[in-house]
Length: 555
Image 1 (cartoon, helix red, strand yellow):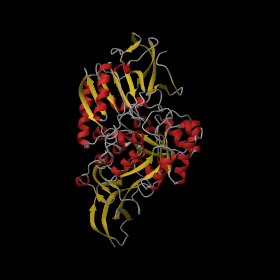
Image 2 (cartoon, one colour):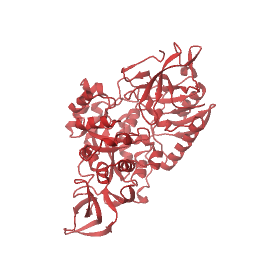
Image 3 (cartoon, helix red, strand yellow):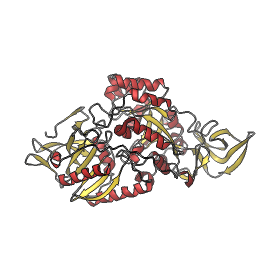
Image 4 (cartoon, helix red, strand yellow):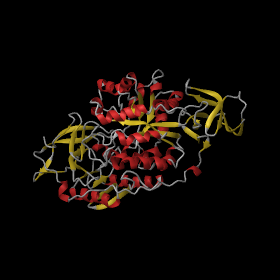
C-alpha cells in the first residue's frame, strides 16, 4: 500500500517506555499508520533523519491565549515552529468580556490554523459572585459547546467555595462535563490538603497552581495530574521540578498558563519548559514524554502525544534533544513551512469600553495615616499584605515615590456601573507618570497605577478612546501605547507588530521607573484577581484572600 510519508531515525521516542529507539514511521492522511520495517507499505516520500531525534509534537496543557496578546491564529505562527502542535486553552479572559460570543470567536479564529486548539470551557465567569465582569456564563449557556469535538472539558475550577457548598450552577457545570465524558481542570491556589480532597471528590483531576515541591507531591499523591507552569510572571518550574522523578513523572506535564508574545519569542513556550527540565536533571526521554503524551492523557484526549499507529502525525525533529534545537516540525503529516502562516485575524467588533470617569473619582480618602498596602512579589502573581504609614493630605492618600507607595485603581468597564476600586500598592517602582491597562484578571476592568491623579486619569481615558490596550502617560502626555482592539485583550495586528509595540511600552515604562526585573504589565493584570493570595483590588474595593472578605484601606 502506498502512503504519504516515511520517516526513518535511529532515535525515535517511545513514550510508553520512555526510550529513544531505532524506528520507521509510516504516515498517511495525517496519521501514523504503522511503525518498523516489517510492513507492506511504500511511501511517496521518504525522509531519513538517521542522526536526528524524533519526538511527539509538544502539548501545552493549560494556556490562556489572550495572555499572549495575540489571537489564536497569530499565536500559532509563534509556537508551531517551536514544536507546540496542540494546546488546551481556557478562553475565560474573552468570556469574561464577551461571554459565549467571545468563546465562539476564539474557536472560529483558531480554525484558520494548523495548530490544534482544544477548548476547556470557562468554569467561573465571573471568577467569584462578587466580581463585576462583562457577563455571567451559567451551566445552561456552556452545555451546548460539549457537542463540539474541539471542546475537551471544563476549565480551571477556581471557585472553591461554590464546589464545597455544592452550589447549584457549579454542580450543574461539573455534572454536564462528566455526562459528556469530558475532563475537569482544577485551580488549587492556596488550598489545603483537605480542600484538595473536596476537588477530587468532585472528579476534578488536574492542577497547575503548585508553587513548591511539597505542593506538587501532595497533588500527585491525591491523584491529580500536575502541570508545571512557566509563564511570563508565574515562573514556577525551576522551583518545583525537583519533585519529579521516574516514578511519578507520568502524572506531570507542562503549561505556560500566561505568557506574553515577547516571552514566547525570546524564551519559547513548552520548548523552554523542556529545556529547563533537562537542565535540572530530568532525562530527555522523560521530559519529552511529559511535554506530549502526559498532557494528552491528563485531558483524556486519545491518539495525540505518541508516535504509534493511529496517533496523529504530530512530530518534532530535533538536532539536539538537550537544547531542544528544532530541525523540522510536522503537523498532521505535513511539513510546516512559512506558507502555512498566511492567515489574518478575524474581526471582533463588540465595544468593550463602557464607563465614565471624573478626575475627582480617583481621590482615595483615608481615615488615618496607617494603611493596608498591596506589595507585589516580582515574577509571581501572589502578593504580600503590608501595613504601612502613608502620606495623607486633606483626608486623601498622596503617593510617596521614595517609599514606592503608589495609587492603584480598578474602573468597571462593562456596564457603566460607576464602580471604582482604589488601593495603595508597593513594588512598581515608578518615579513619575502612570500606566493603565484593560487587562485585569479575570473580570478585565480597567486597572491603572500611577504617581499622580492627572496622569492616571489621562491614561485611563485614552484607553476608552482607542478601545482598550496598555498605555503609558507622563505629564499627561502619551509615551507609548499597545492597542488591544479585540475585547481590550488581544491585538488585531501581526505578532511581530504586536511584539514591537510591546517593546515600546516596556521601554516607556522603564523610562519613568527605577530598574525592575519583572514584567510590569502582566504583574499589574493579576493584582485584580481575588482568587489568588493575598491582597487584591477589584472594582468593589480591597479584597483580603486570607479573610475571604473586603477590608478597609485604613487601619
